[in-house]
Image (cartoon, rainbow, N blue to C red; front, side, top):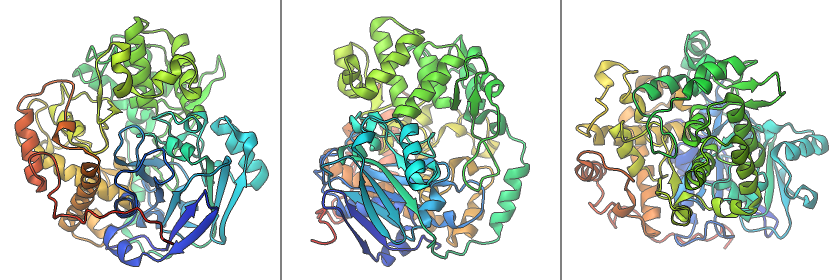
Length: 562
């Protein structure tokens, strides 16, 4: 099996130390990216760790495909214990960071400890340096990126950065890279903030050698030549269809379609798009640099999930208002899905749907934890009673779109996801829209035959997040092609994916997670039976726990030098 190469670099920001450690056996077994980081976290992070404490560890890792020149490979993974869900979680970002990360020569970088001063950590193939930056306190993401470029000559594609939201430990703060791309879900930006790390830079010329089959060029060529709606409208290309089949959450999940969609649809996004946007080495170019000529507002997006959270779910039907929400989240470092849903919860409590001025004010208040923003910064799960609204979250994570009340298999996938109510953990929804081959499609209603497919999709998505491979490669990187690229049998890849899902679950079990957390705020037919079938397929106990003898329960989180 192809795998990433290089040692682990452990950076203790409190002690101002950096140590390297050979992990060749782990690399051979765990590929890279999410799989590698999950195994490291499972074995090195205390099961009872405070997500915002010094003992939590944050992992950045790429995979073998970042050593290719193939489309769909400009991504990398971040892993840690989430302050939003309280469980072990991986997040994934595109952009241009990954190949600069490989230049350091490391397979993974582990951040631990807690600095007594706000710092930037500079990671290179020659070592690690710590720069105290008190003047960057509360700086936005663009302001921080500008400082790094001016002082160090490193463009934003070399950086991961938090904004005020991360510094203020907003539970859904993101880590930004390439200025407008996000490790969005789960609040890992707050983990960096709790460690007093404003940014990390990656640079070097020590990329390890990983041979990738020539198939990569065939895939790259197909991505360049393909005619696909995502090339014009990104993920918003699905909006009208989701609205038509009533799978678009609206007005804080009280409705399943939005009468004002035309004002924020994929067509409106395409009208504002002024150039192509892409990730490193990718010819598919599905990103959305948008500009409003009248106001001069520029941003990248919104993507479909932002269209839902700050658009239909908040009662907003104007594309420029939506673009501004997107831009504010990028500047302050906020996950647009959790931020938008939480704002929508407040709008529901105050009967203020459609109030764009209030929405933009709330985003700023959340990022700085000012006034009501301090409450909203905790996320829906912790504040819904105070607001007097329903708890639209799973495991503390706010819902993405592709509503499970209509797409029942996606509903099951929201519930089983170790990450919470995230659509990309299993990515079941395409199989319930008639957008795939008939042999792979499911009727959107009910759960018959779906639990095994949820398991398969969760498992193969681990491999994509470990390779690291964009999820939108699905039409190009088929199962047999993935076997060729990674030099592994598909069934062996599924087995590794299943082990990683079980590692995540086992870690979370030790933190108290069980079947009672695999729930939904709505009913779908035969849900309990489907959940039990899912557990049986995974070889877990019917209470949603991994059997006690599956993994060593003795994680200590001991630093490598102890």
